[in-house]
Length: 196
Image (cartoon, rainbow, N blue to C red; front, side, top):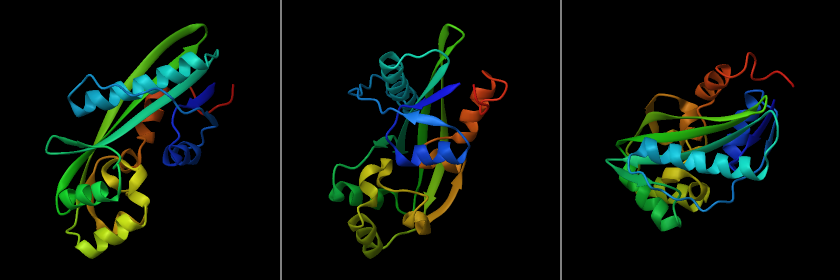
């Protein structure tokens, strides 16, 4: 079975590779369109759009296209990737000393034995930050690390010193709930990691 990751995210690539997947990276090029309002519906909708775009452009027999999208939510407000350092600082200031949710939607477009179908799901993880002083916030923002990440932080890097606790899948916060992904693939294939 051939796997295609419809994402340019280096963190998703790393998670898939560490889990033992052999895959090709073909990022989606669509303009994302949101028609839903609930966080879990938004990430599933966007993940499905990405997977469908790549699947339709690179239709192959016996392949799985993996689309994913991650957002951070605090009290109903959605935090995507910050536009600049100022927005990154504002996001982190709002999240400091509070608990927020990270939602990742995953959509699998599966071509198997001449049949095509999809499997779409999401995971949610609660993340609590410690209080963070202004100097630490400025230093992290000035590093440039927040600018390509939903919610303006990466839990697996330097910002980890400010994470008090998580409740849920750690990898989901990085950008791909790899355990849930594997379990969903197990429903499709006897051994998702075996070669064709």
